[in-house]
Image 1 (cartoon, one colour):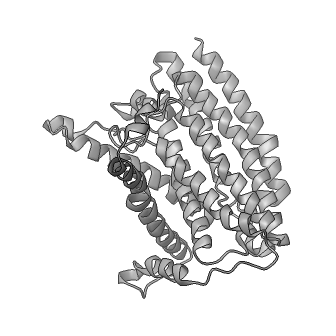
Image 2 (tube, helix red, strand yellow):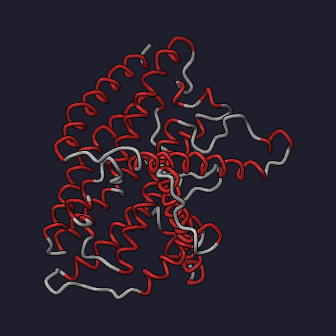
Image 3 (cartoon, helix red, strand yellow):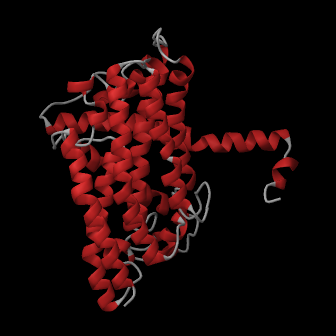
Length: 357
């Protein structure tokens, strides 16, 4: 009954809905991935006193465009002994899990795919498809390096989801909502209303919350780094050990889908951190559009602030990649189970006690 309206849609309306659903891919995710790959090359180059790509376009700005065209033209190789159905479906499943997360992310108060009340749970759930896709890719490849990489990825992602969920529970306990849109709206006006600074709490309660909010932010950001397999948590595709991990046997467009999913995930987790602790799409200083009476300008400002925060946290991910050494497998699991999970559990309990004040 809730979806009866779907049966009354005409063919042109269904086509329009399909085209609109693809907009985030072609308007944001694909351009972001191309720019992020270039930015990563440039960040690493400047950190190592190099120049990075310089020949294709001005200062190498078209290098990633040339690379994506090269990938599209490469032969699609499928090894003889693979499970072909699963091998072909795995990169699609990984990409679906990454792409679907953007449906619940509010880029502004007006540009949001869905204002579902369970936005946080939806994102945690739908990104679980990525784990299934990675396991599928490792198993179907019939390659020992791929299988080891997939097993490492599954153990790592599932383990680091626990402290992530602990911090999400802490935020739910404080705000009483699972909606990403509502979380952003709760932190409106100015930066001192952001949850990293205690959010809507006042007085002594706000002062007591601030250190736990900062610790919670650091824990969830660290956990999300592990969930997207970024250094120092990149053991599932450790080149020095596993060649290329779970996507060793992939080439051409299938490899590009894994690549695109990774960078989409980087922005998605950065956006979650921005929403949970840094006001989401809210401006830290108020809106120029409201001051001048130009209400049409406010959504543009909100989109600017949201993408700026997300891109900043993506930059930090790149910064850390070229700064920190890779963990060993035992170090990675010990860091989660011996430190992050106990700390996040204690923070959850203490924040609950403060919230009762």
